[in-house]
Image 1 (cartoon, rainbow, N blue to C red):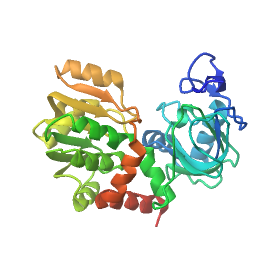
Image 2 (spheres, rainbow, N blue to C red):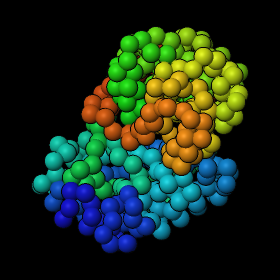
Image 3 (cartoon, helix red, strand yellow):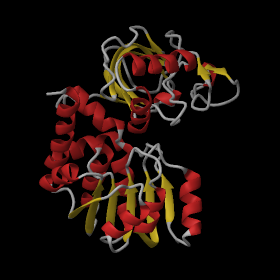
Length: 340
C-alpha cells in the first residue's frame, strides 16, 4: 500500500495517480484509504467549458463524462488535463487512515478528480449537462495523503462545494499580497468563483488598489454592485492589448482566474517589472506564459497555483461568511445555474 495511491495505478505502472492513464476504482478500502459515497461532482471551470463547447448538453455531454470515468477510473479531462472535486458521505475508513474521517461524515474532497479513483453507478441520469455540478451516485477513494473537508453546518452544501472547489486561490492570493506593502492588484476573471474570493482575500491582505477585469458589462455591473473592487474594467482577457489598455498603469500583482486559454500575455503586459503573476487557471499554458514574458522582456515572477495552501478551506469559507459581496455573487451564480 502507498499513501500516495501508487497501488491504485493500473497503467502505466510506476507513475503517480494524477499522471496515470487508468486507475483501479474498486470500492474496497485499503488500510489507509477512505471510501466515499459520491453525491455530486464539481467539474472545474476549464473542463466544464471545454466539454460544453464540444458536446453541448444532455446525452452528448453526459456520455462524454461517463466515457472518461469508465475508461480512466477517474474524471480526468483529456483535453484540459483537469478534473474538479466532489461531495459525498464517508462509507468506510481504513484503520490506518490519517485523515480523521469517520463513516457518516459529509465531506468535500480538496484533491483533484484527476487523481481520485472514481466509479459512477447511475449513468449520471440526474444531470442535464447545463451545470458544472453533476449529481450522481458512485464511489470514490481517498488516499492517506489526500485532503478533505467536513462540510460546515451553517452553509448550504452546494454553496460550500462551490467555495471549496476554488479555495486554494484566495489563500494563495492572501500569501502573495501580504509580501508587499499596499500593492495594486488585478484579478482577471474577477466576477467568477475564484476571482471574487481572490478580490476579497486581496483586500483583507492589504491591497492598496483592486481592479477586477471581466468579460461583459453585465458581469461588471454585478461586481460593482457588491463593491469587491475599486474599479471594474471590461475586456477579453485573451486580447493582451485590450487588457493593457483597459487596466492602464501596470499593477504589482495579477491573479489569473479565467477558465479559457490564451490569457497569459495579457497578464504579463498588465504587470509591472518586479511584479508577480499568479496563474490560478487550469487553462494556463506554461510555455505561453514563460516564452511570452521572455519575448516581452518582462521581469515578472510567475507562480502556478497548485490548489493547496495550509488552512485554505477554512480561509475561503470564512470569506464567504464575512464578505457579503462574495456571498451575493456565489448565490447569484447558484440561482442562475439552477434556473431559479
